[in-house]
Amino acid sequence: MTINAEGNAKNTEEKRAIRWAVVGGGQISQQAFMPAIGRTESSELVALVSGDEEKRDRLAGQYGLAAYGYEQYPELLASGTIDAVYVATPVFRHREFAVPALEAGIHALVEKPFEVSVEAAQAIIDAAERGGATLMAAYRLHQEPGTVALVEAVRGGAVGEPRFFSSVFAQTIDERNHRSNNGFWGGPVADMGTYPLNEARMLFDAEPIEVSAHGVRTSDRDFPDTVAVTLVFPDERVAQFTAAYSTAYTESFTLAGSEGIITSSSCYDWGGDVAITWTTTDADGNSSEHRYDPVDQFAGQVKYFVDCVRAGSEPEPSGAEGLCDVRVLAAIEKSLESGEPVSLEPYERTWHVTNEQVRSVAPGHDPGDDEMVSVITQNP
Image 1 (tube, rainbow, N blue to C red):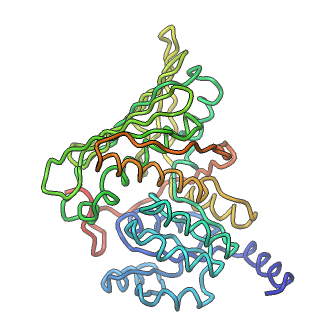
Image 2 (cartoon, rainbow, N blue to C red):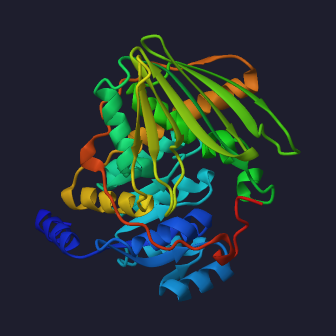
Image 3 (cartoon, rainbow, N blue to C red):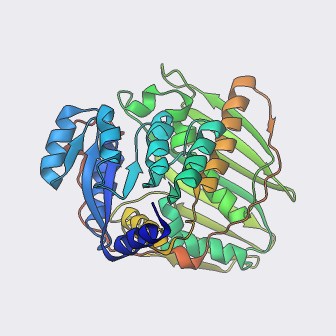
């Protein structure tokens, strides 16, 4: 392609809606991402890739999509009918579908966790560089108003020097769901623990240098379904979180600093009635609640991604953000196996969450669990 042709292609992309293909038709795609596309004027859902024939046929009919099996993916990439893919397969297949798309110049939004190893995550990043395509890790909270305001408040000194972060994120997962049958990388640390891990990294604006983890099994699963993690950060800071598939639903965090604390019990979830809320308490005991109206977090994420595609700018969260979580998750897995702390090489962050990446889209109706097509939903 000549330079002029590239310029013409970019101009055309800027004028029309970005055409999306969803790769993987599981619960998060059906219940959140596919409905979200229709709430953004800048995007159009045109294709679905799935290994389930019933799912392909019914969802394609419902949304008016072209349907492809996994084995037909190369055909879709070569068709010229899509501009971007949303990769929401089981984690161990992210590289399989993200790399060829990115190498073909097709933009990719890749679900978290990014992949199951640092090597695989880096392969996705390298493919984006080779193909000149936009790559973003699907951290929906990075565009959510309340979460970004929280990060900005901490950066502005709301608690003085942040010293300690403690969090829990847990629920009961149906043992028939794929999350219960894909080992550590389908388990609670990778699936749910990524949220407190990412929150701690954002709030400390730093990367951990040591990891230790302890887990127990409360069922016949082949991985610990309740895991407690401790992260040591530079400058004598510590974060701890527990992630589990074995309890009633709970989410919370506490951030303690030299001059105050921030607490939250609505910090990680999504949905039309979810209002991200956090409370600051200063050293004198004075408290202030900060509540943010519900938004469609997935639509906001899509809107921001498309803005980055059209501007030719690197998103935050980029592939590097996804890689940073993977390197910590891999260390947690190693610590669980060895029973020993695992050291991480120092890593300096060169990017930061800012107000400029907030996108607010009003929520709409999302399909209920009983409306899912060929899905064993995560909760029994």
